[in-house]
Length: 223
Length: 94
Ligand SMILES: [Zn+2]
Image: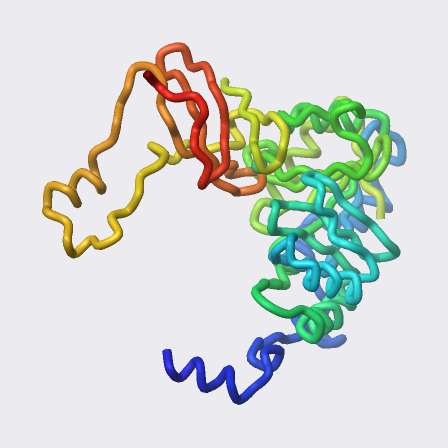
């Protein structure tokens, strides 16, 4: 215990947090959890017409921020780093430029930035944020699927108990919920467009599930 | 199926998003060393099993992952109210 106190006195808080750039160098190609599905080839060879469109937005930077929403200094620090404020209303999200933030819990937000910006954003948080908070780069733990099309709601209805009627689930709303036998963070990004954040270990299962659930409408894989 | 209102998310969700976590309002003895075996055993193992109103702890496992309390009638399955940790129930058995 006394050792910890001594370390804190010697070094300023940011230096005590070990962060690293999780992206490998250019000589190593990054592989998404759906690498084996070869969606790029499916996008070239597969059908171009169907009721459900799927695109993987892969290798993005996923940052989980936990902090105190009644701490105005922390909220101000977020704006300095991301140029957009945390959504404090439950189940809402904000998007500005290439940054998007999802409310996950009263003290937790999921921030998604371009993969190559994750380390820079993380470093800036360490410089700007004060007090008790946590920021974890979970980029490798999940991937993002973009689902759209005339039948996208029909397909999602088979997969989750969430009420997707536009009155209950407007554009911008985000929920963490069950999806098939897995879980997903579902956000409406348009009238007939949704974003799913799914776990790496369930990515293949969800991909197989979506193919099956979309069969009657036709599934189009977009590059 | 229960339709449960999560006081943190502020809306109703299906039961499959939640897990029950046992009886609510169980306070850990402040000084465990001073407890008799009987007191410690009752704290650890003994739970109410009422027919009627029961205060339970639930967690929104697939949602916001926050815990909250629920007052429920174990006979009719009716959910009387949900309230946050640290709050007291307004519906109690006579
Ligand atoms: Zn909740």
